[in-house]
Length: 439
Image 1 (cartoon, rainbow, N blue to C red):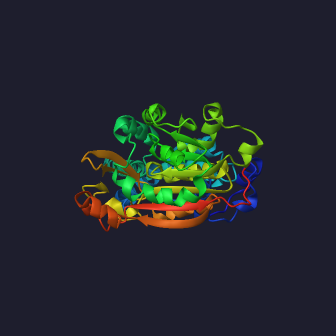
Image 2 (image 1 turned 180 degrees about the horizontal axis):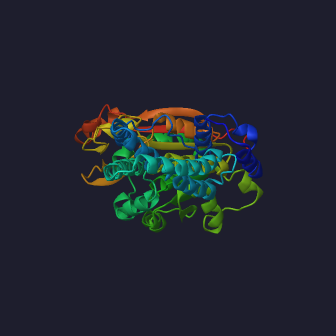
Image 3 (image 1 turned 120 degrees about the horizontal axis):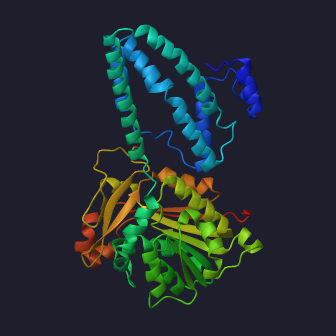
């Protein structure tokens, strides 16, 4: 495969697709190049983590149809592929152009197959007419076609289930709007206030005094208020939940130099530009170089897809001054399969580590008063976090696995005993290189 007639090559020329990029190039290579292009643009890769059962039903049905002979094969090839693929690929093309601004050359695999498969469908239709002359053959063809289309539906249902991200931010906002007042606090009360946030504070201590800080995913402002107490000159917090931001704004201990914005963290930079007057920052050359000395994201990325997390890293890198530090904390992936009374997530223990990637797991975290708050983990591997930081220009400074401290066990053994010895959170400190310039 990969050989085209002169007419097709001339059409490629007219679309700005170099002949050498398609002629004699195997189709699977064109497909892989398309996948790599998309992954580069969305800064996310699933290629090595595709669940084994994603196309399981499709494979079973294809095997069944193969055993049925020519009628089963024709149903699979015509109705299950060549007839409908041009419509599927055409829709993909529109989406990729609108969302990723993909070029003709980058999408040449899809463009070629829209044309070729339409031609193939015309030819195969004539073969079907020739080989399905009896009523019995036609009835069998309909039954086989039903099977193959049901297989495709099952595949797409599993695909959507595997990567259902469309309503993620809306759901996160509602989750926190509904329990915003329970999150509001002035002293440590959540499990992570004892096991996770103290490590964040330790890692920012040498940078926070006199600093301009961006608190990404600030919630109701607990960490922002703490950083003000630690000596921050100004703190700008952003969160997707209007309820949490309202709690931050009306908190009696809110500092005069704490500013809070409603916005999606994956659009951090644009939100700062759109709401610059509300957070006391100036746009212009200094903003382009970097406005903030320090950034934190405390348990934010577990609510984001891998792609959205990468966009957030890109924006954080852009708004930090060269040499600025960024400290973020997330639930440890270990906790996806270790649900305890104090903290944990419901993964059903039926998925392997990599198969959980980018799946949304519901969970809970306990307060010392016995109440529990609902939380989520959009599962990521440790590699995903490291890659998100380094691929967006950060240097890794430190990596910490947070756990219950000895003093916590002494002070409240009944609360901490269920998770003692577990790796609860990951806290990572990164730095924007001094030489970096973000325009």
